[in-house]
Length: 233
Length: 191
Image (cartoon, rainbow over all chains, first blue to last red; front, side, top):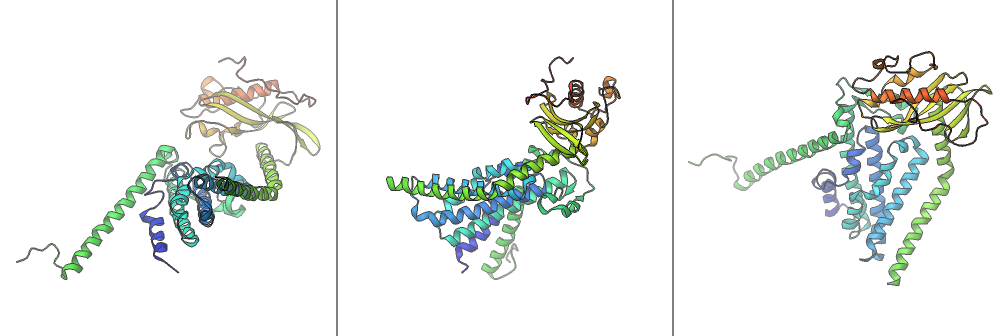
């Protein structure tokens, strides 16, 4: 059941080809709506759902798509799901919709969704497309959530503020007040860019570290000895 | 060619069908959500007192407490903010006292002018219970009684002037034509 494509979808979506940190897609909502944990969570989650559903439907209808009609068809499917998500938010989470409503509609323009539809869902089985949508969406979701944590903690000195908009009255007490001073810059757009840049740098750093360790291991197994770097007598 | 058009149209039909179905299901709830949200916002302007509001126009509501008219909620605006347009809801009692004020829309600088927002600072509450004669309607820097924000004087000045003007021209009479009552507030004010 777990095929090679599925495994590579896991690695690609979450790390190697992470849509936000590596492919640099979906930066508009990523930078604009990641100022608090609640906003990041809602936008990331809605993007994830739309990505999964659009991959699913487009993979199902792929026999009927051809070169001229496929782009309009894909956009139509994505726009439908985004509108449904928008209406759903207005029905069940109205106040959150007032806060980030514009960016829910803009998920249609999020290159991740159209990109995965065009490059993957259109050419792969329904199951593979589902997994791909899930992993790519999760990759984006985790990044935007992380940005939300960092920007809210540094910029507002709180965590989980406004959580009651999502979970109802009791969650109002979930607010964690942090002792640091509020660093205004991270709430503003330039600060979002800088935090994002630090995340990318962090990922590259981790990649390089693991690459160094991996190449040392390769030397050991090839030569059969542990005298790597020692001069031969 | 025609099969392509047909398939695309068919897809469009299904998309439209899905949207109409969901809309039919959710429309009422969304409308009531909107109304409740606006009402909640207006009530919070008055400090969540137990009142009923009756809409007279898009910019004016009559406030009834225990079936008696106690004042009006008016929506006022100004372009004199540091970054331009500011709008706020103002509750005025029949005796021309401020019942409450809340900023609706502004583009002021975060960290400086955004102290207008009640979630950031309680400054806007300093208007509560003030009348035309109870305070001097200027920032402290100009010889008045209202706090200014350090590093942002233009913003509070604009709000003070707007509220003062609204109090001046307020008419409790409720048989007014259903049209915006307040003239642009930049008209005729000393700069």
